[in-house]
Amino acid sequence: MTPPPVRPLTILLVEDNPGDARLIQLMLDEVAGLRVQLVRAERLATGLAFVAVQPFDAALLDLSLPDSHGLATFTRFQQAAPGLPIVVLSGLADEQVALHAVAAGAQDYLVKGQVDSTLLGRALGYAIERKRADEERRQLLAREEAAHAATERLAAERAAVLGQIADGVLIADPAGQITFVNGAAQRLYGMAGVELQAGQPFGMHDLLTTAGTPYPLAELPIARALASGETISDAEWCLRRANGAIITIQGSATPVYADGGLLLGAVLTFRDVTARRDLARQREDFFANASHDLRTPLAAIKASTGVILANEPPGMPPALHRMLTNIEAAAGEMSRLVDDLLELARLEAQKTAFHPLVNDLRALAGRVTRAIEPLVLERGQHLTLNVPAAPVLAAIDTPLIERALLNLLGNAQKYGRDGGSIRLDLSAQRDEAIFSVADDGPGISTEDQERIFERFYRPSGTSARAVVGSGLGLPIVRTTAERHGGRAWIESTPGVGSIFRLALPLAPPHSPCDDALTPLQGASV
Ligand code: ADP
Image 1 (cartoon, rainbow, N blue to C red):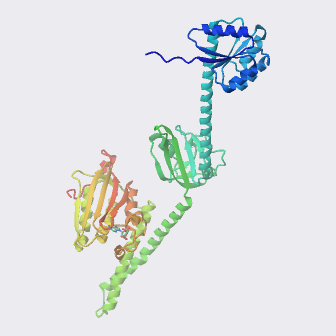
Image 2 (cartoon, rainbow, N blue to C red):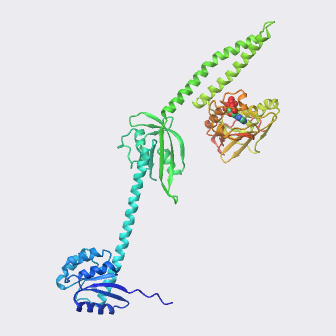
Image 3 (tube, rainbow, N blue to C red):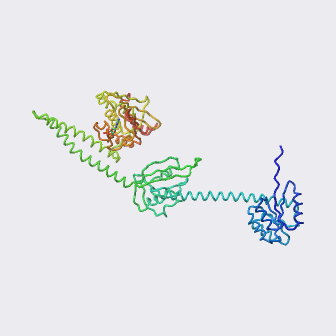
C-alpha cells in the first residue's frame, strides 16, 4: 500500500530582497523529503495581510524591510500571528536583534549568507515541531488550570454548604489528619476556629465514651471508619469542650471512597444531645422513683384486701364482696404495671443486676413454652416449639431473657386469635441466636410497627385495645436484647399475623465463659 501523500508545507517568506528570496526558494527545493509551497511578501504590511487571511505552517521573517526595521518587525508580526512558528532572517549586522527576537518568542534565527539547505530545512522543521509542542504544553496548562479552578470552586462550595449545616462536620484524610472543620463543629468543641483547625490529628481532641473514659486513639470513630471501613451510625459520645464542660453528642462516622474504591478519608457528623439526654435521664429517674414509691402503698392495699377476703365475716353483702375482689384485682394489675415500669427504668439506667452466663437457649425455650401453655390452652390456641438439634449457646442473664420471651409469647397469646397458632422458633444464624415468636393474629399496621417498641405505645382503634396491657412489654424486650448486645424487631402483615424476633450474640466457640456454663435444665426440649 502506498503511504498517503504528505501535504506540502505552506511557508510565508517576508523578504524584500528578490535575490535572497530566490536563494531561499532554491535551498528549500533542495531539502530532501520536504515539499514546500512558498508565499512571498516583500513588505511587512503585505505579510500581515497574508497571515490575516490564510493559514501558514511557518514564516521566514526578514527583520529589515522597507516598511519596518529591527525588533519591531518581529513584534508586530508576532502580534498579528501569535500561533505561527517564526524563523527570523537577519544580516550579520543585526544578529543581536535576531537574538532578542528569539528571546521574545521567535523559534529560531538564521543569518543570511550562512545558511544552506540542510540548515534551513532543519530550522523550519524544528520551528514547526517546537511550536506544536509549545501549543500542546499551553493547552495542557490551560486544562490543568481549569481543573485546579474547578477543584477550588468545589472546595469553596463544600465549605459554604457544610458551613450552613447545623450539625458539626469534621473531615479527615486517610492518615487521620483533619482536612475540614465546619463552624458548627468549632462551636460544639467550644473553640474559636484557631485551635480546632484543619491539619491536626483527630485524636488530640477529647472525645470520651458515654461513661466518661477517653477513647484509645485507634477506637476513635474516625480512626475506626478509616481502619476498617465501617460506618458508625447514631452513636453517642461525650465531648470535653475547650472550657472543660462535658456535653453528650450523637453522631456518625463514615469512610469516604472515590469512584474507583480509593479511600479518600472519613467524615464525622455530630450534634449536641445533652438537653435531650438530661431530659431522658430525668424521665427515667421520675419513673423509677414514682414506681418505687407506689410499691409500698400498693402492697398495703393488696395485703389488706387479702386479709379481709380471707376473713370475710358471715353475711357479708355480695356487692361488698365483689367490690373487695375488684380492689384486689385492680391492685394486682397496678402492681404488675409498677413492676414493669421499675424494671424498664432499671434496665434503661443499666442498674438491673446483670449476670450473663453461657446457656443452651434450647432449654430456656422449652421452659418458657411450658410456662405459657396453660394460658394458650384457655383460648384453644396451638403452640409449637422448634429448636435445632445442636446446642445454641449464648451468654445470657437467664431471668431477663425468660421475661422478654414470656412477654412476646404472652402477647401472641393475648392478641392472637382464639384457636390460632403460635410458634416459638430458635435458630443460629451467622453470629446470632434468633428467637422468633410467630402468631396468626390480627397483625400490626406499618405505622404502628415503627412505634411498637416505644414505651407506653399501644396502637389505637384496634381490638388489641380491649386487652389489658401497659405498653411496656415490648420496650422491656428491646432493652433486654440491647443490654445483651442483641436486637429485637417485628415483621408483621396486617390480617395475616406477626413475627417478633429477639436476636442475641452467640457465644464464641471456646469462650472463657464456658467455664461458668450453667447446668442445662431440661436440655431435651
Ligand atoms: P402491652 O401488651 O402491655 O400493651 P406491649 O409493649 O407488649 O404492651 O405491646 C404493645 C402493643 O403492641 C400492644 O398493646 C398490642 O396492641 C401490640 N401487640 C403486641 N404484640 C402483638 C401481637 N403479637 N399481635 C398484635 N398486636 C400486638
